[in-house]
Image 1 (cartoon, rainbow, N blue to C red):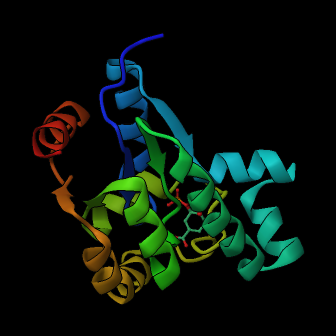
Image 2: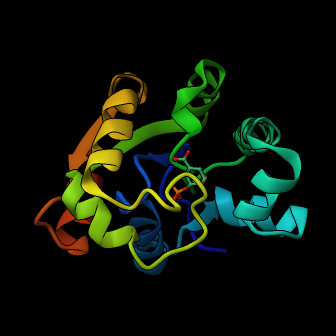
Image 3: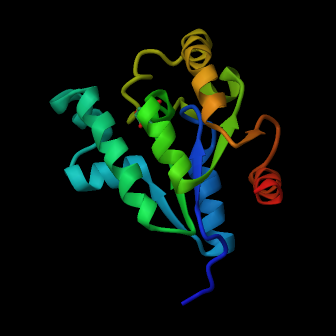
Length: 172
Ligand code: S3P
C-alpha cells in the first residue's frame, strides 16, 4: 500500500472540456492517486450513458446523484474527484465539495473549450450547441459560482498538461 500524499481529496471543477479528466489521468499516473470521475461512476452505477440518464430520468435526478456521490467521498482521502461541469451550480454541492478537500477550478476560453469538446457526443447540454457563442454564454452564467467555489484557480489556455499539473501541485 503506497503512502498517501494528501489527507484530503482534490476536487477538480470547471466547464466541460476545461481539462478535469486529462489532469486527473495525469495525477493518477504520476502520483498513483485514485481518481473518481463523477460522470463515469454515475454512468456505471446507472448502467447507462449520461445522455440516457438525462433523457430517461431528467436532469434533476442526475444532479441528485452528483450530490450523493460528493457526500459519499467525504469518508475518503487522497482521491482526485473529477466533477461534472454542473456540480458547483448547486449551493449544497459547494458545501459538500469543501468538506472533501481543496477545490481546484480549471478555466479555458470558449474557443479552447470548443476545440476540446467538438468530437464528443455524451454531453447533452452541448449537443446542437457546439459554437463559441453558446459556450461563452453558458460559461458566463456559471462564472460567479465556479469562482466562489474554488480555493485555487488555474488557467489552462496555452499550457500543456505537465505545466498545468506542476502549477496545481505547487499551489496545493
Ligand atoms: C455537465 C457536464 C458534464 C456532465 C453533464 C452535465 C454540465 O460533465 O456532468 O453532461 O452541466 O456542465 P463534464 O464537465 O465532465 O463534461
